[in-house]
Length: 125
Image 1: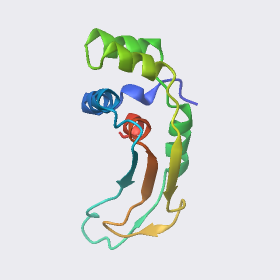
Image 2 (image 1 turned 45 degrees about the vertical axis):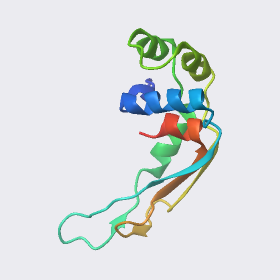
Image 3 (image 1 turned 90 degrees about the vertical axis):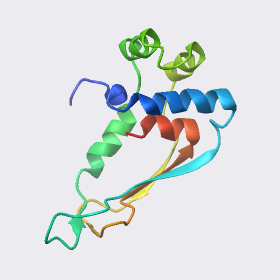
């Protein structure tokens, strides 16, 4: 197993949006994010789902360690209150989607993440 945190492998915009939702009181709103592909490579009519297990493993391990939190704090990406919130963050929500090996077509949701806004935003890569 790889020993790293994927927490900073995202656009910092997601963390600034998290900060905003925590400040404006919308962090606990229920939301849904969908993962889909708009187009397939030339000549392909369908895709085959692969890597779902890897995604779920990453979700289970997702956390921000002290070094990650220091990075966000030192660059003033988020407020000290959000840093505090992130210290104890664990994803809470549900994920639905196609099974490994199933076919999918363009514009169909491969994964659907349903969670509170703050929780879903943290994991939205």
